Length: 138
Image (cartoon, rainbow, N blue to C red):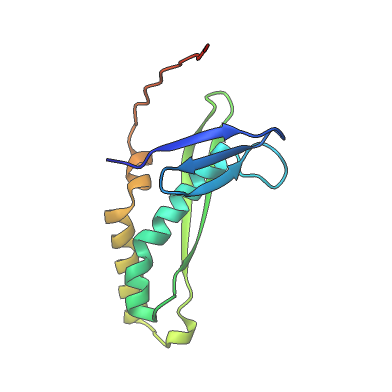
């Protein structure tokens, strides 16, 4: 079963997201805060980072990872994203790899992300969302 997540409003107008495992992130529409669209892009980048971590560490050493940048095309009329672009940059300068080894690493990183990134898989298909609204009175 997936972990339970919830959000709560703060007095300053920002929000906090929590998980039943103790994770926490602040978000909102204020300066210096991630908004929900930003969090969608962060989720995609984070998924790629975690999906590629093992293969990058195996190739370049423990603690190495990719810098992943995500941007998207936002459609104001539909109030949604129509496309995301993800760039995965692996800094292998200190590893001394060249030519065919670079191509092999690129291929392995792409394959790991393609295979293991749940967020990417979800974004690539239409995902139904059900919603229930409850109003507590006592």
